[in-house]
Image (cartoon, rainbow, N blue to C red):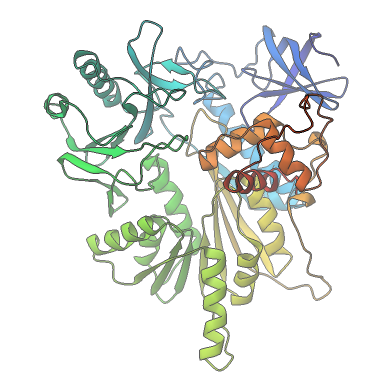
Length: 555
């Protein structure tokens, strides 16, 4: 396959970024905006040895599952990857995604998966579900302030105040802010020059309480003529909190490290089930409250608590799952690396008068092993135990040290809540090789119109095979035959940007590839002078790139 070849392709799968995947004579092509079942004419734009990227030129035969997108910007915007796929097909795709990873990466038998897999929990209305939105601001060619969302894989703003995944109140808030900027000559931030004031606006909405928060992220410390903006915003029903978050860093991290209250209070409140939460501009809080209640309800159902259990909730965030569990357990211990999240968790426990939940700051892979070892020292060698352990890790999954400690503590049940079924499958493989069995698996569609899906798994103690040998594992154990060359440079950049807010160059990625012993192509753009020096990858970016390599199974 060569660049500029025009081919006819049937789409059979969806990639991690929402691209349609098809094959021509065994050669894999990724085609943006194509969905499963489409037959398309596509032009090859980039050709690698085993795979390539193509642009869809024409839909020859549309899929039976293709629908007209509700948003006119669906293809341009990077927010919705599969809005042109019927919702029923989206759910089927997400279930197959979970199944495929369990089979291919976890090595689980298809019959076993069929026995434990439950249908994906979808939404009755898969739009207007987000309680949080972050809008970047910029300037159009005429010099007017604009806001919207970034086009896919870029920082080019698609001007649009109406996102159908967000609440309807967002549009009026954004239009008030844009009008304020025009009338008072308040400039939008420019990433290239570092000048301008308004960077982003964060809007939060309480689905139960109807409370609204607006937080302006600015490249400075003061908002000129703020009273004029406050007067307009406070006329909106439900306005509860208006805050300012200074951020003068020259990076892609959206929020500043602090915030100042301009009007009202520094938080809004909302409920998941019967648990009340205070949510500040810097709080982590699930963006889809309707599905979050189902997700946590499922975790609670799987835990099947009777009131006598000790439960550990690892990666607990602001205590959302912990406080659900505490209503049914004897004692809950939550662990989270972010200090502010733990402060929020303690405060939320106090608000709800929950006294049997304790929270600790630290890495789960350090706190639990340290606790296990310390317990043995102070209890005459007796092993620390837990009745139930719940884990809800980031995309990279659980650290191996943590999994080892979970196995040592021998909980009767492990409830694994995952936002990435690939690393979930890897971790389940380890747990099942060390005495656990999968009892139930169910996906929860937290993010309709996107390729992402949450998964909840129940494991319990099974029969330990004495013949089994402990196996060291990593993402290298995955069957990555479809992607022999590993992740592409754009995929690595996207991962790093999404997870750390850092931008990394091809040069930096190549440097770290060489450090890790990963082959890279010859550099034909060498400096003319032997004395010329290339910029070296900073430590924080090297760490982020290595995390991406681990995620994609390259190291």
